Image 1 (cartoon, rainbow, N blue to C red):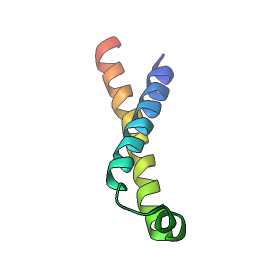
Image 2: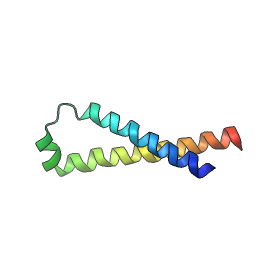
Image 3: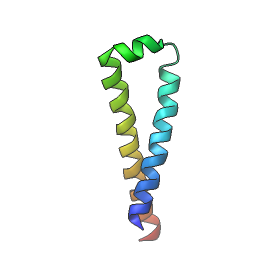
Image 4: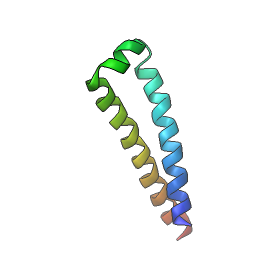
Length: 67
């Protein structure tokens, strides 16, 4: 069951990361996002870090509540 909590946390973290990116990249043009490798690496890795953090938090919460 802890795997399910981790997967759900990862998905929710990924969704939260995408919402954060849509807010942060609101004023950046589509051409800049596609052409600038710095933007791709910086904001792409930020989304994955938030997703992994969401998975970690979900497993910690699961352990404290159900175990």
